[in-house]
Length: 261
Image (cartoon, rainbow, N blue to C red; front, side):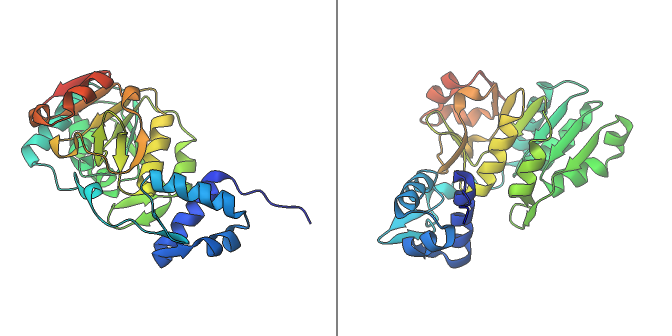
């Protein structure tokens, strides 16, 4: 009988889905479900723990408890968010194809993008897509929006998963607008949720230019699941309160440039 090889990313997805369903899972159960060796499972659990997707326990793994990764998830101050969004759009130009991940800043960016013409926005955010699709100003400027297919995640108000990632790989965008939960020099852009991070990673990999948009609550924070190294980011747009954060100077030195809004 021919053996079917399961690739690493597929194993990661399967393990994560088992944990989401049961919250804890034994090594023996993973071995049986995936049809791989205990050593392979051990390596996968170590790697997933490093990404913040799980916490290894005696004989298996459990979902990580809420903790520092939850930092940076508060809604951004409205005035700061609008200023940051306008500053980000000022770094773009007309007639671009832009990826934008779902996040707390997505609707602010969607509104600000109305200042540009001929924009093609590809996003997994329902709220951002609706803002663009129902805006007379966007319509007048010839802007259009496409929503990535995939599994719907209620807290995210958008899509994610394998199908969404596969659709991202069909395009090459001029820019990717990322809204990480955390952003620091060592770990780069991070999310607490691995699936969210995987989608952001695909956007970053298929864009010519990466822009991180984050307020001070996300700066110098590690939310566990890393998806874009700081030195790959062309520009960080944030508010001036970020300058007071420990670790800001190192982060500012790692990215291409910083815009303080």
